[in-house]
Image (cartoon, rainbow, N blue to C red):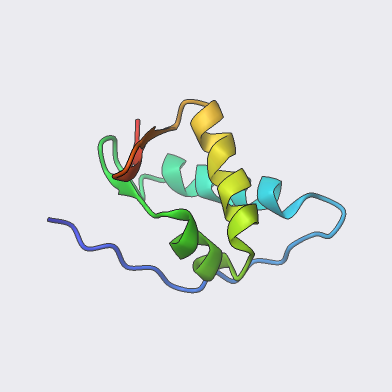
Length: 83
């Protein structure tokens, strides 16, 4: 079983671009870099909110972008998984 280790992400958020878009871009970059592999459980929105120091509703929007793109799938009630 893999252990999920989250650290605070230091990222300059540009106020002219929605935070959810910027966080989705960073999560997409991390997915592309192989931080999570297909089938891995993806961090929940509470963990992402804490990691990026954003509101949970912003994290929900950012993860929703990745679900819409087909990069993640939501399995109720287990969470999000990498496709």
